[in-house]
Image (cartoon, rainbow, N blue to C red):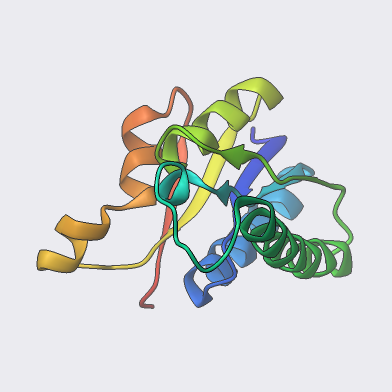
Length: 148
């Protein structure tokens, strides 16, 4: 039984599909959701952009993340589910590792994330959050594809 379901959300269409699937599972299992959007400072942690200061960048990323979390929470509430949210800030590791750590700390029974379906050089350069979650996970992971 999956009572505590953690969902990684990033505002993409694939993330929305993952949220919809998590809502289905939570309703079937009488579970609750924890929505996680990682404020990813990792790519900017050592680089000086020269255009935007660290505090400004952090504020922009936090506001965007809050908007994403708010929209996802509204969807889950419409489905009648209990929802918690988290906006962890990441400075040191890949997003997938942050999601797994959040799942561990919360005691999640299941992690749900979308796959963006990147292939070739794009996958090599950008990596895959879903892949990193699956590799790091110590609990079941439901991967929701971007194409149905």
